[in-house]
Amino acid sequence: MMNPLETFSTDRLILRRPVPNDAEAVFAYASDSDVMRYLPRLPSTDIAESRAFLERCERVWETHEALVWAITLNQGMSLIGMIEGRLSAHGVELGYVLNRPWWGNGYMTEAAGPVIEWALGEPDVHRVWAYTDVDNQASQRVLERLGMQREGTLHRWMTHPTPSDAPSDAFMYAIWK
Image 1 (cartoon, rainbow, N blue to C red):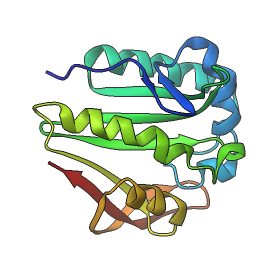
Image 2: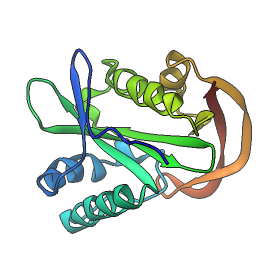
Image 3: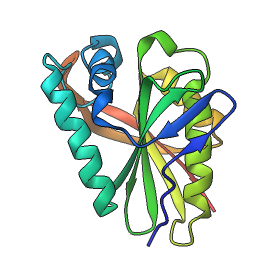
Image 4: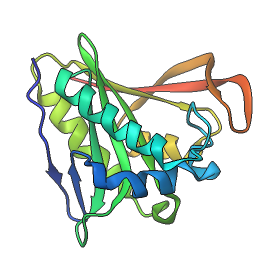
């Protein structure tokens, strides 16, 4: 059984469990088609979807199906993105999203680093992996900066309602102990 950490702190960020008051910040990124471009759902049109997402985050945390952290700046607790570790038998699948105003500042690499370090420190976790669309170069750079190795291509792996429902290829990245 994993021992999840509820908070992580870095030089510029605090990762914490999401709370219901995060709904507006979640809606801000979830309604942006550029942010949602490589995610498997359409941009949100109603803040109620963000509230339901936050309720799901709480449920999956309690069952340890997945651990979801809100990414916030040290200067304020306002959410700028989310990072998730989905638990499996011997590993953790990493997923993340960052609101557009904070792209290009190294925040996702900074947020994911301690999550990966914590996960690989757990006795039952042998690898952490993530996949990203072959066209999502920014996400590929994040994963490479984290020391993850590209393991291969998953053909016709992902569907993104934006821009197309057609399955696209993804690169699989992983780091292991």
